[in-house]
Length: 310
Image (tube, rainbow, N blue to C red):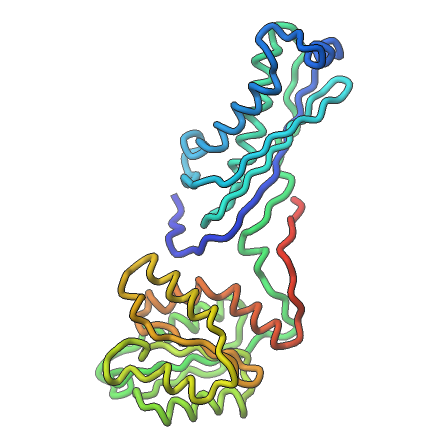
């Protein structure tokens, strides 16, 4: 299975369909309730719902997940029944396979219940019709690449007695998303130099975002939040709350993080943890929201996620 432990849960939905063709007399039997095995639509709806909830038992590499909604509808034509399945969940992976499994099992159940009165049954066109909630729905489009800096804050790294990995990993993650990392700097944990550097990034370089690593804990030298708050025009509490929510779902140690996020001019500044894993996972968690914030600052508009046709 693919490791999805670093992903954040979002509202996922998918619609899938399948079509079963049959003789016109079979359609009439369904409408008039004359199918010997009972109501095929009712049984197919129950079977499809069960199938969606148990997809991980049928498709080996599907993750188990708590589904929030499974809806099964039928459209009856002159010689066919079309199944429409919709599945929704707030989870880390998509529900496309759950929707397609539901549609497939509904069609198979109809086939099973009707085969004794119709030798011409054929299942057609099992397909995914749309999906929402994946990473492609949270991508922001920018005319030119965003410009960013990574500020590594650590006495030991600045003194050369320890090698930084968190800052480089954050910069690599940004580059992977097409963001231009214009500067990576190491500073000791002193408020004045940190504040001056953040002010320079925002006022002189006019960067779109600055990510700091380290100095967000409770030791006497953890001063990054204080240095950041000094130069902010306003805070963005939601980003910091997301960092802690995401972090505490993985380790209780994240609860003592004092990281903040905010805006100076048109620059978004976010404090990340000092460990490589913590910094990268935290960035992954907030990146869709961070990019949306940059888009808003640059004059973008609020948009709702919409279904992507397949």
